Length: 87
Image 1: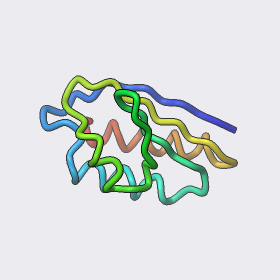
Image 2: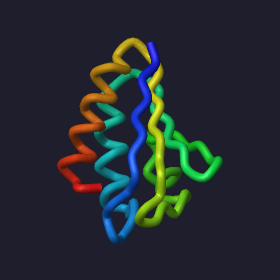
Image 3: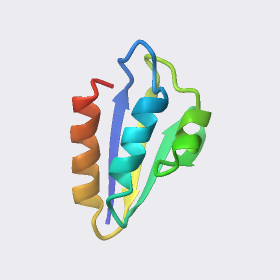
Image 4: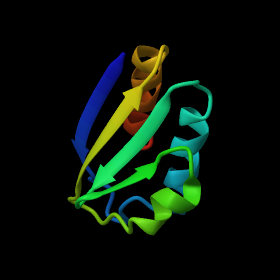
């Protein structure tokens, strides 16, 4: 199973280290593969350093793709976390 979620970063500081850490921790709770796509680059969302390396600014359009048996639950948890963080 594969699930995709797209959104635009509204946080004035972009996707900074604290947010990257919280997203990676959430993704790591699931067996599925999580990828974050930005500006033609793809990283493992479970890797804090990978996420930070993208240098995602405010107003950037991102997509998250989750593939695996628990993809639906994983994307639901990430969507909730993104809303909680006001990303």
